[in-house]
Amino acid sequence: MGEFFKNIGKIPYEGKNSTNPLAFKYYDPDEVIAGKPMREHLRFALSWWHTMGGDGTDMFGVGTADKTWGESEPEARAKAKVDAAFEIMEKLSIDYFCFHDRDLSPEYGSLAETNAKLDEITDYVKEKQAQTGAKLLWGTAKCFDHPRYMHGAGTSPSADVFAFTAAQIKKAIEATVKLGGKGYVFWGGREGYETLLNTNTALELDNMARLMKMAVRYARSIGYTGDFYIEPKPKEPTKHQYDFDTATVLGFLRKYGLENDFKMNIEANHATLAQHTFQHELRMARDNNVFGSIDANQGDTLLGWDTDQFPTNVYDAALCMYEVLKAGGFTNGGLNFDAKARRGSFTPEDIFHSYIAGMDTFALGLRIAVKMIEDGRIDKFVEERYSSWTNGIGKDIIDEKVGFEELEKYALEKGEVTDSLGSGRQEMLESIMNNIMFSL
Ligand code: XLS
Ligand code: CA
Ligand code: CA
Image (cartoon, rainbow, N blue to C red; front, side, top):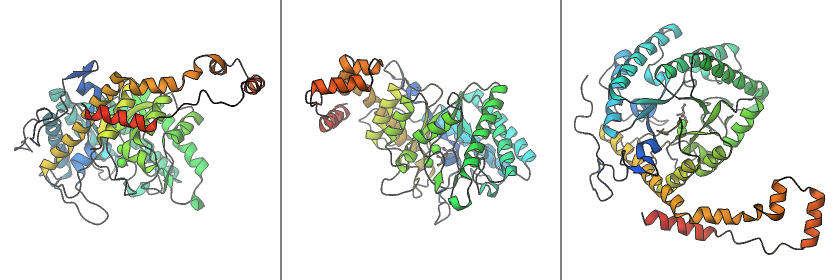
């Protein structure tokens, strides 16, 4: 196996005053902050699909980046991809990776042959993991690109497609377990609809839940102890995706009794497509004890589609890491760069510039979030804002000691509410946030 990126060595941490584009300015993997090394806080992962397979093809044109890895035959290319991926991870100090089954190894003539070829590649990945220590963050199945999935996979009107989906997911779970993954993702690729005129939504959602229950039952039976994730996305490729956002997914999980096995994989770009902030989706997951993992990217707010850009917005990354810290940090999850370099950034070196930009953004976000918590002004303001719930009538409401009759009596006696309103101080808080960010 040769070296793919001969002109690029291991990316060093050089600190914020460095002008070396191939150095980290903020990500110092082994630096301990808030009790543990940065690499353990951030748990960065490489996405196999964008990084190893995405060549810049879009609706208007062919690829611009060469992602053949010097091989024309599918078997040899799949192996070369493994070599190149491990070289990238090693040079960038990335400890984890994520894959779809078909990113590792494509489809061949039959499911049996496809599975056998996937086994060969996962054997090879496992060998490389043993040599390097790189770990699998999560695996998933690509149940959306083949024509058989044109009407959905788990929500297809065809029972045969449902059966094929189950078979594919069974194998993808086996590959995840084999490579030591502690996460398995369901992203509803084409699990949605284009028009209600041809769709039985009730049956489709029941079937999706049936598929997920089968997945959990089977995975636990082969010793999988990790988390299952649902990755909310409101639209694209379908007009309406069933996993619209965290709140919608929570309703689904609770309806079908799946809430103990599933958590959320929150993607920044999907949050904004749902007209939420990234922080909102993370907060909803944290509040409901389903915070799991993150697809770290960003969209373009002027565009209405899923651009999967490498994250460079420090403000959003800081608010993200604030939620992560408040959730107690990652357990099985991490920050997967579900992100691709722009079509015009097509050279091998751009892979490194992209990851350095994304990793430094989140490292800076972590540093700021730690400061926000240590500084305490924001948390203290929120605590005081809700202080009327810690005693008196507020405490009686929480303790369920009072009902409508008692509250009516209280309100009649008290008269108009004037003393406990208080200013929301939004501008002051935004200014504190800026102060913390820029005094780092
Ligand atoms: C696509 C999704 C996809 C999932 C994995 O929009 O983000 O990449 O993360 O299937
Ligand atoms: Ca994603
Ligand atoms: Ca996306």
